[in-house]
Length: 99
Length: 467
Image (cartoon, helix red, strand yellow):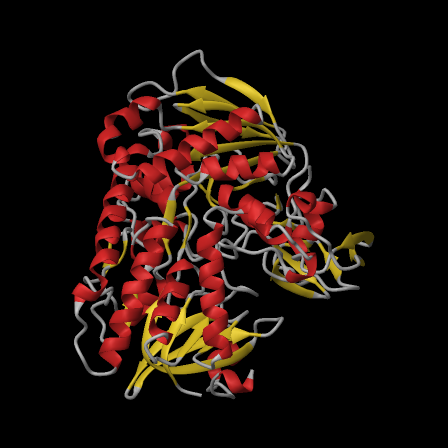
């Protein structure tokens, strides 16, 4: 049993997005975090001070730990933002703004 | 478009209130951050996933169906306007009433203002997570976060999962993940059988809840999930991602029993230590807030600010059934007050009795589920306690010990703990525990980050018509 089977899901066709130039398949309705998790990716940000990896934490938009760069816009909450066909997702280094 | 009532939050409390008020002729605008109604408890799989059996992920599905149908009926009749994907950042008192300020659009940068005569704050709650060494590693997330991913996107973490902490949320999270095919290595709960036995009388007063707990436990056993009561996670291990956790048994004083520590390999740790209410909007409105318990309300769910009601987790953590009762009473009170009459509480006597019983039950649960008394002793100086600003426990202890900080506000000013993106929502209980100060509700002028250009101008459009 997987969650799609459990919920009797019949998803609309999958589409392609990229994460750090790697192609991933995503389903309509997924958040950016869901697309990354489904591909086995658990971190997509490095912290501003110590450069430590971070990924999803609260999962509901409260903690801002899952910030990521989507289509050149940094500081997007991966747990809230819907993934769209062709999205270019990148690991956010620090503030996400080049020094 | 002005509205009679703006309801903030489309979870159980907000839905019950919207339906009760709309049924009594109130024009309601329901403002919610999610793409569809339900809140955290009834979070629905995204439409594109075509889920035909979403009930497999939920409990009390019949209640949800009733709420959903009630909402749809009032929307179709034009009595309720549901603004989805609207993130409320402020509620403002004006000379003519109240104005709800939200951000909408895919980038959450389009300002929307809703003018209302009354506002119901049904803003819900979020999970409390106390710090421990390794809790910032990727792979460690909140128990509710793992559940939100499952319910909303039907995606689960790969590999082995440990569910840990304390509180009534852990059982449904562990059973939900196990039912979805996840290998749940253990459920680690710091409360033990003796904590339940101490409150046996009060727990039995809500037999439905006890049965629910027993069902969850039976299901876990069927999935061969190991339950470790009276245990705690001492540390999460890994370099760049989680590889294992160390758990230990707790002695009666709440300290790890020497010699009981053991390592459980895992890829995900879903952890939580109870819930906290979202009180930021109430706070900026000037509503009285009872410490960390929630927004203070009277028997009609009114706050002490005229025109502002509150219901559900925002007024104190108590679960979905309590939120429904409070929301219903709020909706009826609002309908009466907006028409200039005092409501007759006898009309909702049955619901008020249920509200009282559920509040008593949640007080009992607070006594059963508590983090280990000495959890802060396990937080070594190198552990990051403020995740946003990367402030370590040692820095907080130095602020208290060497610099003499005596309260949370001073600790924050000296260390920056609580000054980051989340505005202290996540770290406040942890920093307070490590500092030995009383926790205070996170305070912020805005309930979420707002682009400067939005603050610099009046909203370009008023109300739902323009968005």
